[in-house]
Length: 269
Length: 177
Image 1: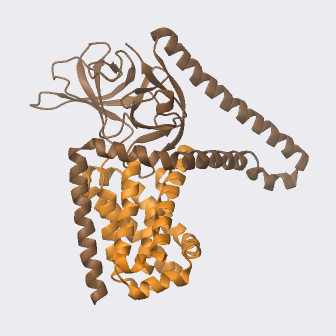
Image 2: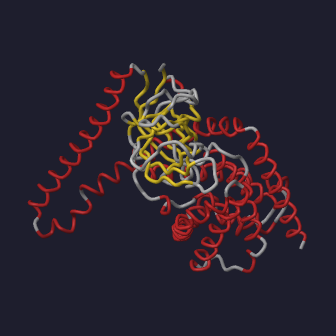
Image 3: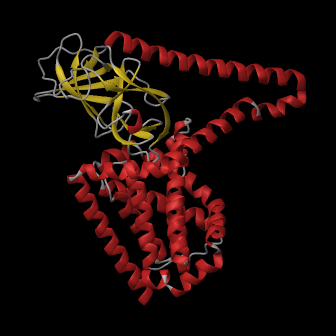
């Protein structure tokens, strides 16, 4: 009975402490960012090792283990097939990596932006925050609020950086916002994440001209993203009856579910 | 000594578990199939360390999960504390050596902790409805890992020591010293 009373009182105490912490971090978001930088110091070596080993096991599984059963039928043939598949998979990987790097190079040449090429080594596992961890940090000149792009398309912004890794908040996170405009009609608004794979564009006035298929680009007004980077395409436009603003759904151009290589812009006009 | 070991294992399991989850998502595993190791540790201590020190450990595991997300500090800590409290109060009546009861409790506790998390953090209803498949998937994945994970934790903490902590059921002070 005494033990139960102790447990109940400690649960109540720690639960209220959690609520106080939550309220404090809502008012002071920088506290959460400071904490994640400390966490990354400890976790990034582990995360890198886990990423490397999971990639290794994944490639071993894909290129070898699945073929063990079939090898009994025709050992020699399957061995050759396995080698060929591994080679094709390797070349495909190299080709995709080269394509991503080519796009980054094009962007640098066209715009003069300077930045750091990074590899994605992790993602937020809780499922409630849309963010990824990349393998470069403050030692490479990466800092908070630097834009992350894939090709010429916006992916998100850095919200925390440790010496050798950084966390990038994706466009689709519900706390993300990007000042944007419709490329064709120049209508302005803000693209907000809503926790799903799509975004919504808010604050576009009812009388503005927006149709499905329009391209949404950054306006540069938020001081974070340079002007003219592609955000996505309009997939749905709805007029709110009696409202001041349109309801616009935007599908991000960058495939945010399969991110591998990102370009973090460190210098741009 | 026992308390220190529990503390170190809590930190180790939480960080390693989050890193494994993060790595699994990075190679393309859907979020629903990523187990929650920190929560499993909370389930473990709610069975074996039913004391105020266990509440502190649950709070710490939740806080590490909060810190890793870089957003709000506190929602996971609160969710883990309530989950710990719910199980530790009835842990005497659950036969933990049975794999079935362990899986069942873990499923309920994962669903419960996610619900509490959403209620403490913002925008609960829309998130709950849009991502309920992920929560259910996580619950089952975490639950099916539990019977494999518990023996590992018993080995790391040495079962007899944990059992003695449970019997003592003392305060933070009495367990550490």
